[in-house]
Image: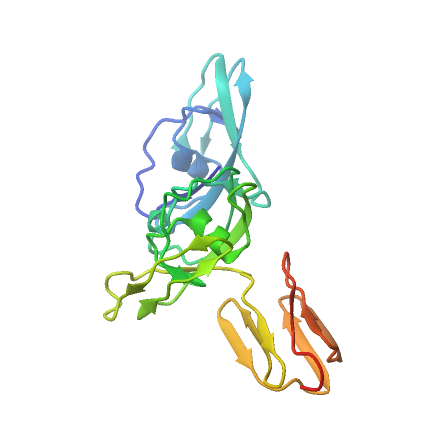
Length: 250
């Protein structure tokens, strides 16, 4: 499971164990003990639940004292960050501390509940369900769940309603930016479109470019650059998505 330890959280709670912690231990206090979190700056941490142990050995690390304990039937340990933790369908961006501005990758469980509404298209209000927004954007599904990455977005004057992948989002106007100061976007959501004669439109997170296709089309994604003739039809494949458009002579 993934948690964000807020910058101002108290870390005087009790914990038991070292590296592997009794599952009743305060997670953010244990994260300080493990060297993964420094109070004053919010930090994403992910834990992996494990089986019980016969004993737990306490130590003092990073100013935190953990305690010894006898047998207990549940544990957790921190992952190295390469394994995304699971959030639930009710989780919203409102749960994210305001000072946390990094990208976040989560797993949404299968058999999701769309009772939790969403507002916007491509960029969503901070009260929107993260997993539901991911399903609306087409990067996860309600039935199978999946993994998605989100990032903070700039405040929006309005949020546009749409129907995508069988999911309806709602509209919201925020002319003063005050009613929704912290929207978010789904990274890599499949919103690329193209049209014959006008050249393709390719939309990536935080960027939109339009225009005629040059003789040698260049598409650059993070860590990758590809060049080649503009085929008919043009096919662009970001991770997990295929879009087509722009046939014939552009």
